[in-house]
Length: 61
Image 1 (cartoon, rainbow, N blue to C red):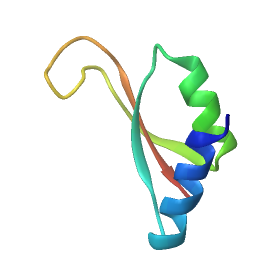
Image 2 (cartoon, helix red, strand yellow):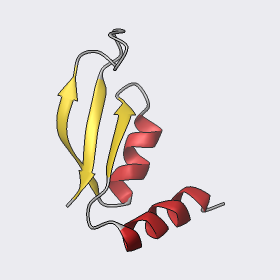
Image 3 (cartoon, rainbow, N blue to C red):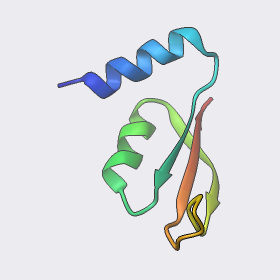
Image 4 (tube, rainbow, N blue to C red):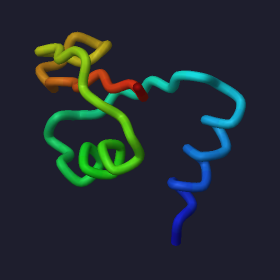
């Protein structure tokens, strides 16, 4: 439907750099953000609540 893409594009018009946290176990989300110009800059072994869910921290270049 393009809603996610539209949201990212709108946010990018108001902010020079965007950041997202993506569950590493969700390759579809990772691919979406990579297609939108995000790149991984950090990986954590746990999520913000300390649970064992690796998180990919991504940002636009």
